[in-house]
Image (cartoon, rainbow, N blue to C red; front, side, top):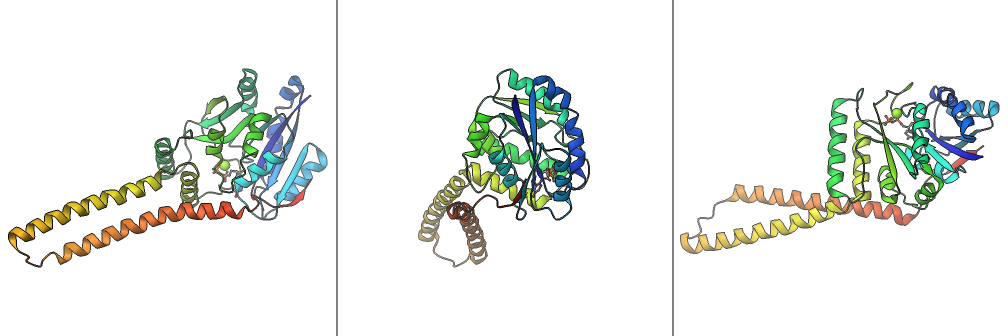
Amino acid sequence: MSLLSVIIPCYNEQENVPFFYEEFLKNEAFFRERGMDFELIYVNDGSRDATVAEIKKLHEKDSRVRLISFSRNFGKEAAMYAGLEKSKGDYVVIMDVDLQDPPSLLPEMFAGIDEGYDCVATRRVSRKGEPPIRSFFARRFYRLMKHISKTEIMDGARDYRLMTRQVVDAIVSMREYNRFTKGIFGWVGFETKWIEYENIERAKGETKWNFWKLLIYSIDGITAFSTMPLSVAAFMGVFFCLVALLLIVFIVVRTLIFGDPVSGWPSLVCIISMISGVQLFCIGIVGQYLAKTYMEVKNRPIYLVKEEI
Ligand code: UDP
Ligand code: MG
């Protein structure tokens, strides 16, 4: 009998925990038909509400429910990593507890595995129900990533993926601290089938993301999967050197021909401010990479477990 591990990151999701369980069990007949067992690994990412109590309640009535509870909030990336690392299944799927990743897609996803794919991923083709500026910037982000990164990162891709053990082991072997899973999935490769669906609004509770968090997350994504900003900084340096060279020639020649009327103080101030701005911007880019390198070098654990059932 093969085993499916379901990884469910939860952060302050007390209402959704039992709700998800019920929705998921609607697939039970499908699993029985396939001769397949499953384990539900709820990863509690330092929730401050009754999430853990709800998961324990489920565990008491169904031993297939497992709990990994963190010592504090480490973020969804860490929760997914913990789940992947501790999963035992031949197949593993990551799902949000808010039911934005519909469990009803699972039979279609398994059909993909039967066709011989290593990985079946999902992407949203619409973003209805999302604030328009968020959708706008999300689209720009994916467009930008397409140009500056060699790793394929699909627009609208969810973390909702069904993977074989081989793919899971590959992902677990990537122990980087700054995790950007959407990029990691692309980086490890393997044959991936994409399933598209319309966006579904979360069942209960509220999203944990706001605009700033997403912006910072996108910068993490860029630094994790592209070094293009460093090249842009270097290119800007060369560009401004050339401009300065041309200006020097121009001014020397002009002075020799027309004399020196000692003017141009305002333009000088403008040029100095602009160039110092560009310099600070470039130092900032270098700083971003340095900071990420610093965090990686410290080699801290990605998550800390407080309790495991
Ligand atoms: N989540 C988590 N840790 C966090 C934030 C979110 O484990 O720090 C979980 C959350 O409980 C949910 C999933 O990640 O199951 C997706 O979060 P959310 O629905 O808030 O994001 P959205 O769907 O709006 O992108
Ligand atoms: Mg959600």
